[in-house]
Image (tube, rainbow, N blue to C red):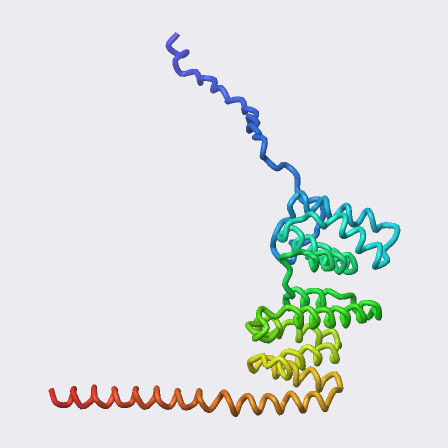
Length: 266
């Protein structure tokens, strides 16, 4: 009996438990993206109304993509969207490659009371235009003409010019996009209307973009005129800036001399 005390005891191995399923809530997303499309250009998700409007526009123009049919379908599909939804739908159409439909959406936006001609919006249309397409090139020229006409009609007050308070950075974006697409005459029309005729005070970047772009696209006379405007701008703007800088340096040197003299007297 005593030997039974030294017998090895059998150890029980625990049985593995099955993992308990986690409760799912109503808002849990269990599927991945439906395709590999990237984010929107403007970084904004489309609302349900904008998604339905874009789908309706593409469905209505599936058989007929002529400009008149696209404008009619865009007016019917996008006419009731809010400003943010209409701009987001316009950007989404450009991102998907439906440039003609995005152009029709722009015609819808022009009829809205909140619409103002924005150079940045036109720059996105120029940049997203299909390359090597004569119809798209003609449409870009027509866009520039429409933009200039809208600016001529949209002066805030009779005493103010149409380019009063214009964002120079956005206008430079438009000119740069036109130069990149090879639309030299359209870029020159914008520059001439805004700077040479409209009196808009631009910066060095605009002059350099225009001078290099005109020369690269073969418009030597226009490039020379831009360089002359740039030289005149430098003569008018830079000397006052140098005068202010010289005054600041003189005051700083004077204060340093006084501090040195006070320290030597101690």
